Image: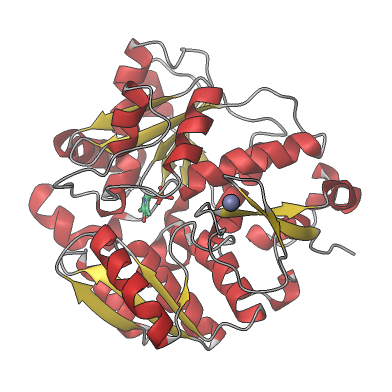
Length: 392
Ligand SMILES: *Cc1c(COP(=O)(O)O)cnc(C)c1O
Ligand SMILES: [Zn+2]
């Protein structure tokens, strides 16, 4: 029988260890906490062969996830397709260009992965009122999973977030607090109010378990590529949870004996109107500076100062990856190209990865023989108001 092999939490900054049997937010040093497992124990049942007959959602990786899969708050998250992009691949001279298409997740984006594990653990450890600041999609996912869990959700969202995000929060019965500002302003407001309101803070990287759901992207890629990793992964980076999560998954997979020390090039793609990680990467810095006047139609990339910037930058550098910014105009052209040439109606954030491709090939970060994975992080359907003007 499979079981979670979770043992404790570890600070990603100072390496302090904390118990995992109670609700935790940041380390006392301010660093995000990461979940640690007994991977020797996990490896006894978590094998590639053994995975074959398991459930299709992300809970198939139960040993390296928190809590009991049988008690998880689940809506069918994960298990998304990895699609070859033959036409777009041929166009840029790549024989093995893939798309990990996250649009079929509950709530239409990959935020479902993180909120499934985050809400499951929050409920298991006794939280009742869950709150987060969001650029949009995390709010919708929290609202859905909290409803499923029978918990209260409080969502702080910019008032100009995509309409679908506001509507889904209302539909799921979340308390929606619209803020005249960005996700960073929402986060400030949440920090001021959470104690008084008794909210459990589910902000990006402020609790340890959203990363755990998103890391399953890394496990799925390995399985879907037949027991190997790609050469490069292009990730549309806001808070960077998925990139940090996949990097963590690769470390676990090495400890499990599934892979060696080689890693895919981790490539962070941002919008040129909000590119703090790209700027820090270009300047050789280990942390980012808050981006002023953040502006892009790719709402999920409108994160002026990611809390986990140092983890993102570390993964990029250690993998010999890159960080690259693309314009909203190029993002829209990429939305169109995916839709017309491959039948994928992607979100602007995801399309940013396609938009980044030509420059990455030109600068030889990506080679013609590389196995390359783009991430479409959500459905274009969640951006009808944003895209209806731009795509016509
Ligand atoms: C949140 C979001 C992103 C960015 O993800 P991070 O893990 O915060 O970097 C990208 N695309 C979509 C659709 C999102 O909702
Ligand atoms: Zn610490």
